[in-house]
Every structure is written in C-alpha cells, then in structure tokens.
Length: 72
Image (cartoon, rainbow, N blue to C red; front, top):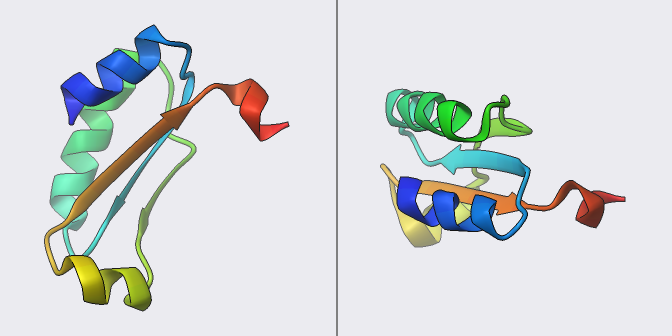
C-alpha cells in the first residue's frame, strides 16, 4: 500500500486518506508511514460504513490519493 501511494504521489496526488474495517491500530500505523511519505497529515482516517464492511470484512485497509485540484 505504501508503494501504491508512492506511485500516486509521483503522478500528482497531494491529498490522501486511510480507511479501515475494525483495524484501528493498523490504520494508525499506515497513516503514520504515509504522513512521512507525503509530508502532510491525511485528509481523514476513518472506519468504513457497514455496507462496505459487509463486503470486504474485518481487518481491511483502504487508501486513496488524488491531486488537491480534483477536490475543487
């Protein structure tokens, strides 16, 4: 996941997030590593809702990154 986000950063992603299903500590550790990579804090770290969690199961980690201009 770190390598994926390294690639996203290389193509212009400067905003990023981490989501999880019942994996608070893993999400926290991943966010700490990505904060070092990006030099910024995440837009958010959150637990996914029950609909997504039902499909992916407990312990899932999700990441995403995109250019800040895409948020305007």
